[in-house]
Image (cartoon, rainbow, N blue to C red; front, side):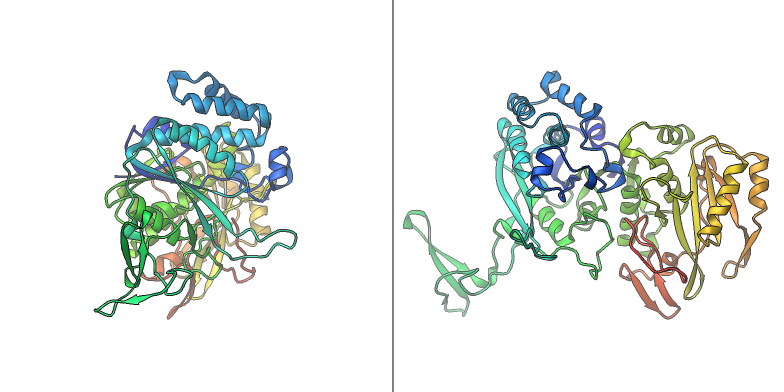
Length: 525
């Protein structure tokens, strides 16, 4: 059974992922690589900390970092190798208490759990960038090599796209560290062979042709004891520099997620490090490229992410991958953990004090009610009373807007009156107010005063402002308007589609709004 966890990956790993149960782990942890090395080293860079709302304070020196440092130094139950404890002590002395040490403490705690979860034949691929990769390799060496593991490769992912530096060489690569837990590990090199081109750049030296007309090159082994033949048509196992294009704006697989990695990159990693039915784990799922590729390649998978927006996007992506006939049913084949299923867990999400998950209740409510179709408002500070927006069809090539707001308590008639003004300001045709509390009669009356909206396709009237309780949503109530996704054919690509019925647009949850007739289309993350 595939598993998708919503929550802090450290808690999830410790509570739900068993010892030696994972065959391959790939992680691409969040880190704001826009800051330069000196800024990170000196714990500067507040002006560029907003990579995403959920990670605004992830690397600040705060109670989480202090507790993590204490756990590493005290080392309860011998969870960490002595080398890891000594390394953190040394880094504490060198770096001081700041954002970089907080980042390394967070990574150390999680890498120790990933090592525990890997099978003896398991491998780990850690994706990072040159800004702090040297520190991460020290941590990996202390966690893996001190317990019989091996550093196998530093893979350079060269992507080449983007601008060019004027005062330094162009920064066009990421680093991927490849480690095994033990001496014997899964490495399916033949499953990822690439073309071997004629010429010195790939093949080297003079080419020969055998009696069957096949082109090859002869190479002496170590000590010139054996002569090997390398045939051009057999391809080759890639070296440690992978030239795979990054995702561009016109690419079919693009979702608009800021750190999305190309499917070709994850396909190579999953093919080489696992077999069919093996378990692949991604503890920082993001937009779900790892689990989408694992599913496509016949692997089992475990995904973890701390933001509901990512969980929603992953569910949407898996549905889109499965095809039209499976929309709305994909969750049946997935074990979901951490997503509110009753009013108590919804209240717990609404009252969480974790500064990394501010607005998570609002995101969950908005995306759940709209079946993962809404665009979540990610603006810092005042949101203008709008937590999300969704576009619905009004004709073969027209649509209109619904705005949504979610409240976790303390609501009254004034909230509805203000929301009505926000709706009019946004020129929305409809609005939905989601509340954890039961609405008062005065709230219901104020909502009714907004009047009705007639939807021609559905042939019915809707309240312009609808009040929905969280309990009603938990009982199954959802948005019941036609969305563009409901009419997209199974094989349609993500993005705009020219169809007989007119222009349609896939509604990607929290990412990419359908075009509004009175509004220019812009990407929101």
